[in-house]
Length: 234
Image (cartoon, rainbow, N blue to C red; front, side):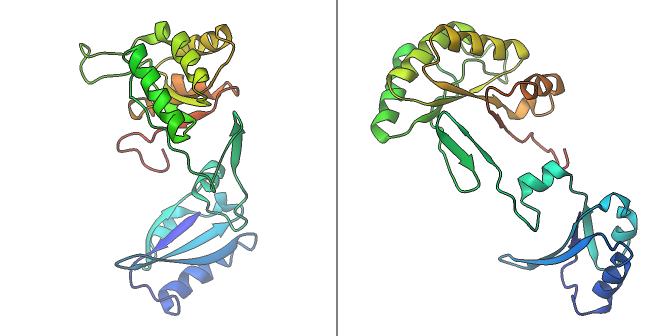
C-alpha cells in the first residue's frame, strides 16, 4: 500500500505523527518513508510492505496530511518497483534479455503493406545492427474502410524475410484469439526463422477475452499497451 502525503506535510509534525501512530497497530507491516524530488515539489510517500489487506483505506484517506491512498497488488508492486527488496524481474526471448536494465527499440511500419517495403525495412535495420522491429499484419483502424492489414496471408513472407536479415523479434498486434493461432502456424510452416512478440494495442487494453487468450499461452511474450484513460489499478 502507498500513502501519498499532501504537499507541505511536515514529517516531523503532528499530521505525520498521527498517521505513524495509527500504523503502529499493524506490527506485521514494514513502514518506509520515501521522498521523491520533482521539479516543482518534493513528493513524500509512505510505503507499507506486508499484509496490508486489513488496513482500511478510508481511515487513512480521511487523515489531514494524506492526499490519496493506493492499494498495491503483488503484480502492481513488481511492475511499479514498489518493494524494499526490488527483486529483479525479466525474461530472455530469442537470446535477447528484457528487464529493468535493458532498452530495446522496435522501429518499423504500423502495418506491413508490400513485400518490397518489408524487405527494405529489414535490410535497413540489419545495417543499423537492430534485431527487433514491429510489423503489423492485423491493424484496427478508426474507419472500417481504411487498410486493415494483409492478415495471415503476409505472415509467411514477413517471417522468411525477417530471418533472411537477422531480425530476431517482430512485435505484431493481435485483435482476436484466431490471430495467435495463425501466427503460430506461420512460424511453424516457415521453420521459425524469427520470433514474435504479441502486441495488445491501446484499443484492446480491456478486451478481456483476448487478454485471457494471450495470457493462457507461455510460448510468445506479450507487449501490453496501456489503454486510454485507464488508471494504474486497471
